[in-house]
Length: 120
Image (cartoon, rainbow, N blue to C red; front, top):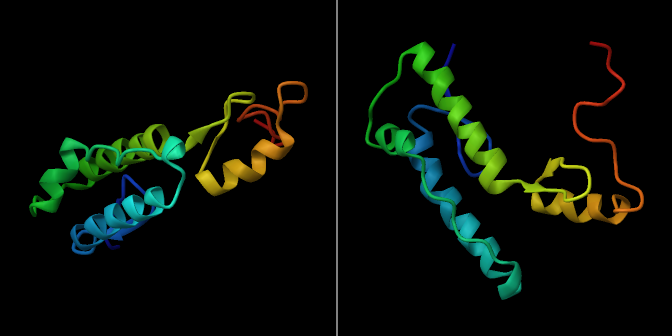
């Protein structure tokens, strides 16, 4: 099974050799997309997690370290990239947030995350 590692900016997974190629491209894409927004809506590039810098320099991870790495990258993605709805608390990528914001209001908020119809 290939060793997949998560990108802290887009949340996608890449092989250990592909991630060092992907991250700089993903950062360029982030900056380019933010530059197209009005100045008031632009967000700075999130800081690279320390653990990611080691991977980009060629450090390999054991399987259990990979799980910790991916969890850390996901937390960065969730907290620094996704936007949180002020009414329901769910997180969305910026495009989905625009769509979500049309139906989720203070008067009629969407159900919070984790309250779906699935049985526990």
